[in-house]
Image: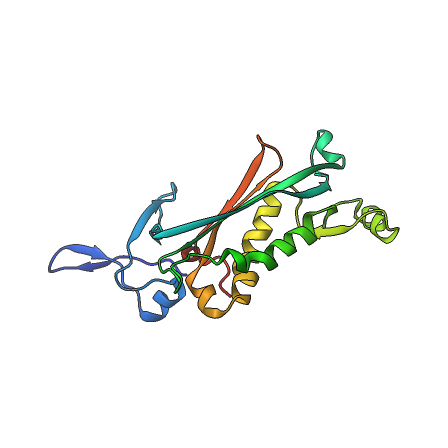
Length: 211
């Protein structure tokens, strides 16, 4: 989006911004949407669509799904050593329109997702793509000493970010276009322990995955 300047209405002495249809489509805006101004602290401002809470939210939690091991090779502490957790996952789905059964999400329809979680995170060793010891760790799988799951980033933040994108761009579309258009996974929490958790949040209106 190019930088826009205000148009001055000489009759009313008011200033406004004008967007054509192609610009509105690019932004994902519609006539009637509410917008907000964000001060960029450098003399410029950003105008963005105001996020509106959806009418309905439902949640699904998988507690201590299975033991998983990984390391954070960038850490300066013992976290750079292989260690493990029984990860728990908490998902939130949002919509303005319930389905014909008056549900936000068909929890029974989440079985394929749970199977994916178990395949990736139950009795597995996560290996980060940029781990300098990646080949040695992958070799543990070749030797039959570990079940390897390669990830872009290890840790709760990296896993929650991966799952947020996977659920919204792959899993929900696999449930059918109508479901993908109706429901959005707005939060993914990944918990290592009772006291340590990270989450990834977002909304369809953020347009993060638009091509």
